[in-house]
Length: 111
Image 1 (spheres, helix red, strand yellow):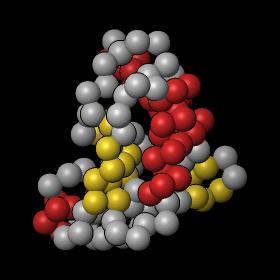
Image 2 (spheres, rainbow, N blue to C red; image 1 turned 90 degrees about the horizontal axis):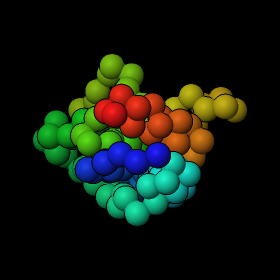
Image 3 (cartoon, one colour; image 1 turned 90 degrees about the vertical axis):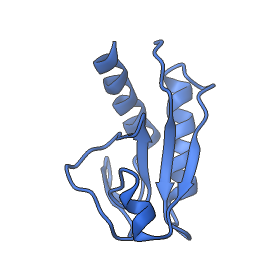
Image 4 (spheres, rainbow, N blue to C red; image 1 turned 135 degrees about the vertical axis):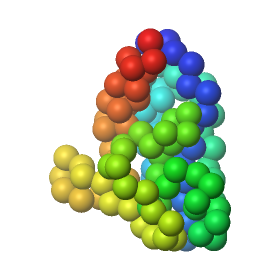
């Protein structure tokens, strides 16, 4: 699978307990889709103004080329946590498999 992802970001608030796991799972998912060389940037937001400047639906929000990889239609200006629906219920971060599936879908959209 080959496509250009120009920017991969994990947007988070300070002390978010899920930032590291979301970042690690994103790296694993990128490896799984053959794009392991793609850098993953973590972006700390600390003010409502910073939140307003990015696409943010709670911490952590995973962005690919400035678009939420798991869009819900809702954004947030609050410095708050986010929950994801996972295979085992609600979770603070999507699984690596969920991220890889979402990446494959996003890549298929742009090809």
